[in-house]
Amino acid sequence: ASYDMGGHDTYMHKEIHEQADAVDRVLRGRIDDRFSTVHLGGLNLDAREARQIRRVKILGCGTSYHAGMIGAQMIEELARIPADAEPASEFRYRNAVVDPDTLYIAVSQSGETYDVLAAVQELKRKGARVLGVVNVVGSAIARESDGGIYVHAGPEVCVVSTKCFTNTTVAFALLALHLGRTRDLSVADGKRIIAGLRRLPEQINEILKTEDEIKELAQEFADARSMLFIGRVRGYPVAREASLKLKEVSYIHAEAYPASELKHGPLALIEPALPTVAIVPDDDLLEKNRAALEEIKARSGKILAVAHREQEKADRTVVVPKNEDELDPILMGIPLQLLAYHTALALGRDIDKPRNLAKSVTVE
Ligand code: G6P
Image 1 (cartoon, rainbow, N blue to C red):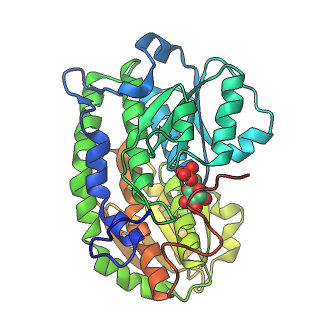
Image 2 (image 1 turned 90 degrees about the horizontal axis):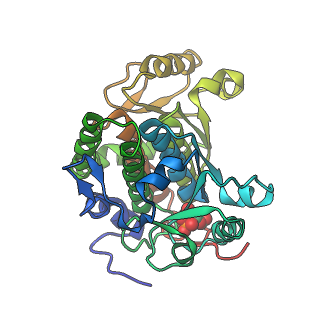
Image 3 (image 1 turned 30 degrees about the horizontal axis):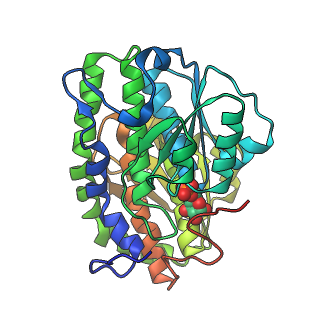
């Protein structure tokens, strides 16, 4: 398919800049202010069934898997249901125990990724309940699931996913809120999350205004041979996705690590030639994250922080607007989409079609 580039030089750039509108679409018509919850018409899950869920298992590949990691944390935090994400390809081949009280969620932009589809089919065959969190309406995974949420990101053409990632994390926030409000999430917390969701589009546009600053940073990073991305808890999946984005589009090697694990290995690599990107939200782990920055600084590592305020130990900080703690991961990766883009541009890469990659992998 080919769509108008609307004055952008690549689809990736266009799609990054469409994110405020895309988030508007995933929210539209779904917020229920009366009960401080959300309506998700396609879920096919009544309140009684929702309350019977004892675990949530999220399956996806690539960027969708990372969105699922964020979703799992949101579900666990807001609904207090144990949740985790796993690459669909791994899940399929380890003869996982399929449990009737677990809600399985398949995540896919295209809705056609073979490993995800095969996992859905195997789960269904064993009688599990499977929901889809999918972008493409009517796609195979959407059809084969028992219900689900369309993320309404609109067509995504660039092989590397940006706006669909963001919309998928918002869709998970909606699901987490919905499940939470059938359980113990209070009306006040429901209101707080809804207000946070409504702030997202404007905050995204604010982040996109930092593009010139990030473009400048990208010139500095373009000659790095490798980069380290770190974060803890909410920041960790953001680090994973940012590292994937950079690899895919710039071909610079990148590795994501929980900041808490630095001392168990990666500190050995720190030197001026290995820059670190640190995700530093203003949450209860702020001091812990700052300590990690100090460890890196003490070894002369160069640091770029993505944070809610200037970080003294970092060489540069990109400041992003603060939302509710639970929703911060939705925003914190957006500057790093721009970093990946501008690094790739500086290196003259084929941004919309990176070598060796395909938009959707419909074979094994
Ligand atoms: C391919 C693409 C990735 C994408 C992954 C999953 O590897 O290159 O960008 O994240 O497939 O695709 P899906 O359509 O299932 O989200």
